Length: 148
Image (cartoon, rainbow, N blue to C red; front, side, top):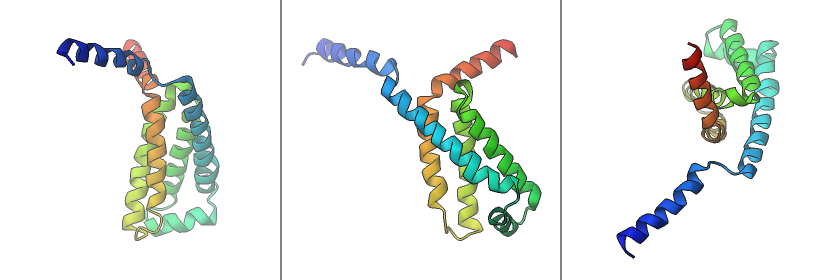
């Protein structure tokens, strides 16, 4: 194959990649966003925000006090809400990924790695959202720059 033919065939593939995710991908990721938002709001943030014993015991072991539990719960709830707002979805996924890094480190250092795989799984799922919704993050950055 000549260099020209090789160049032409690789150029033909670029528009497909540059066009972005398919409609099916967007729908699957939207469903993933909703499931993740429900998890973070209901199963993760709510017990922290109402000081359920399941949350207080874990945060007592961490040793930062109740303020930290409420902070993490509030951040998780804010992230859950932002996950379902299109313009905020990409940045919300990245913020929640940061929380998952902290959760992973805490699982390893405070709880001897007992549930360390859980934040890793959520990190991977949030990465999918962040990558597919990166155009929303770009739009948000442009909007902030133009009005800032």
